[in-house]
Image 1 (cartoon, one colour):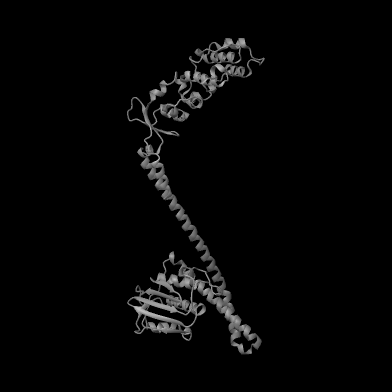
Image 2 (image 1 turned 45 degrees about the vertical axis):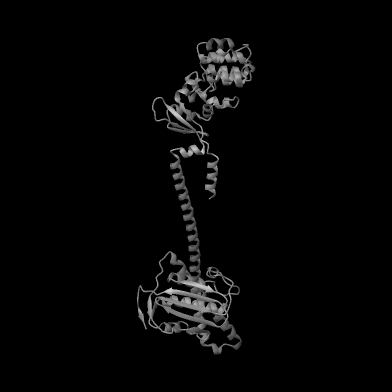
Length: 468
């Protein structure tokens, strides 16, 4: 939303149409006295021109003939046959004050560029000699400077015409492309597009403003490319996040599987060892019988923890591996409830079905849900604990209620390993119930004051095995 607001603000401040004009290639070529003042390569020092005499003259300029090895008479004789040497010698004579003045004719005849890749006009202007230091003189010799030196000249003069602002932003490579008819160029502030007419070569120049950007035929393609790139980046980030989270849970489940597996064998061995003492319980000294019973209870608790962790792992993997329920038709649902809850009948009350009937479900996982809710009510709730069962068409509804009160919502209660204060369990019971009920096509809900856990599940009909 902020991005679109930002774009809207820019658009509203850029309603005025930006300037544009036509630029012919001949304008560039004819703006200078000679081709060497336009060709991009001449702006760089030329090693080909750096012969021995050129190097001697450049050294003479820097030392102003104080070097005893320099023979001015000999240098003068050798310089007459080469325009570059002759012009360089004239400059040395003037610069070292052997010659009093340097006429404008010096700058109006070729070569216009020094061997070091700077025009003679700009070199003289930057040399510090008073007669060439004024802006007026520089402007009068403007067409004798190199095309790519315009940026240096703009810093000191007031050339405000649009073409010169554009020229000052061209790099040597861009100038070369322009001369050779490149279809499109983009500078810091301008976009240059070649005209469809082959002769004469001309360009349409536009300022890089938002309004011109929208008018450009490349704008739609740029926006589409940007959106595609943004979508791909977002997909990559989401995929990485999902992958990282999935790997975290896999590592966690692997650790739990390892712990459960390693505990199962020593606990089983301890239980078998306790059977020997249980058979000889009467022979155990009375002061050791209490300790034996405490040890037996702790081992049973370990067994329950291992069993609960195994149930949790099986339900937590169902999102990746299709969970297979075993459909069994229970001919007497009331009879099934009495059998599953036989150990709790003295502690709870049950409202059975008034009209007993058959129901198809997975009896093991339904018993897991029932026993977990009843244990939760007996341990954390307040008596009496009551079970209410209803069967309507293909839906089974079971409610487990007690007289306790809760101050947590269902999301917190079904978070793995989130235990209430003083709990001795692993905090997995309600998590297991919630996941199993959801996978069986139902939903777990809760009401408080008093506490009532209620869930409904659909009847399973993919496989029928009759059980009386």
